[in-house]
Length: 173
Figure 1: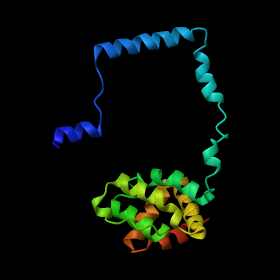
Figure 2: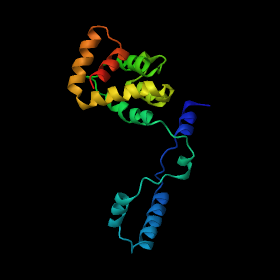
Figure 3: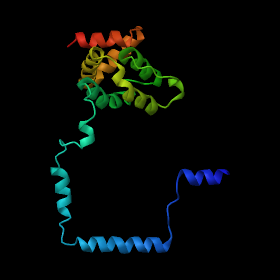
Figure 4: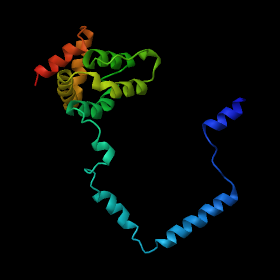
């Protein structure tokens, strides 16, 4: 099989056949005219009023995630992309291993976003007590990022591990 055939099978080309486009326009026109009595501005209001607390049935069958996991998954990408807190991929990988117990194989060969995704997807491997400590420390980091930057920089220069830094952040509470 040639490379051209492989490429075509991976991603279908968009159709630009004039007859297909004309048929689409006719069908779209028919659909819009069928619902011409709808107030389309109400769609925006409907979206704003939508009750997002009601979950689809399949979500209710999933096991509940610990609140610490949910909190971390929400804030980790924001913190890891802050280059003053985590200037290198090594910093992120070191934090993941020492603070969360998440090992990232071949982290030096991955992009920052791949590493962050790996951590977010594997955060649940950490025990709840460890996650609780990390959540508290991250909350303090986000409350005052400038102070956290200074503290991280100073303590890393002294050779302090992330575990020690997290304990120190939690002691300052």
